[in-house]
Length: 241
Image (cartoon, rainbow, N blue to C red):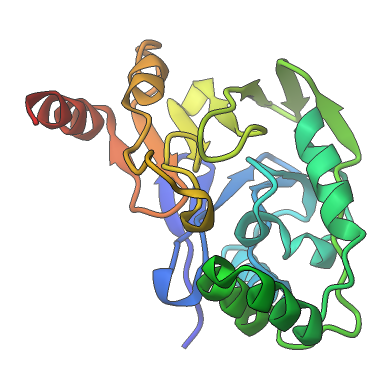
């Protein structure tokens, strides 16, 4: 059975997340002649399934990747797309550091031995990649510090750095004409192996992202898309705790 894209708005889809496979949502933005991916999948196999799903909707060729942050489940599929990649400047530095590591099953086992808190994450990486011989990390070819506006055919995209406790390089990707905002993992708690005391979402950040009333649909990395009303209710319930 082929994977299917889920349409979110005119010209916007997602390849839906799957927690069992450690797969995050991948955004698909189609202009008249080009397709922009928001994140790239967690490895080559994930990326190939995304490519097949794009063929099913006759999407234009992929022309750009936008990384919401450097974590592996959002970037390790990038090697399958020979196109420019856009990210925050600190994402470039972090991925550059990661690209120097001797990625292999042996390396992952050694890292788990040194830090058992990495067990779940690194086992998931090994399952996602499978074959390490040709693996490489596609580094961003364009980076920005605070804000970047892109005009691609008839589509305007806005990338804004928000940082946060989950990853310092987190950005949001906004599509104003569709009222859609891709959040990545920006308001999530830190990754499990880095958690100490902070295990709650960043409610203040999420609240700040709702200030601009032109956005009605919000796509986080590891859940179904949310409406503005759903997130406002989520924040109200958090305030009552």
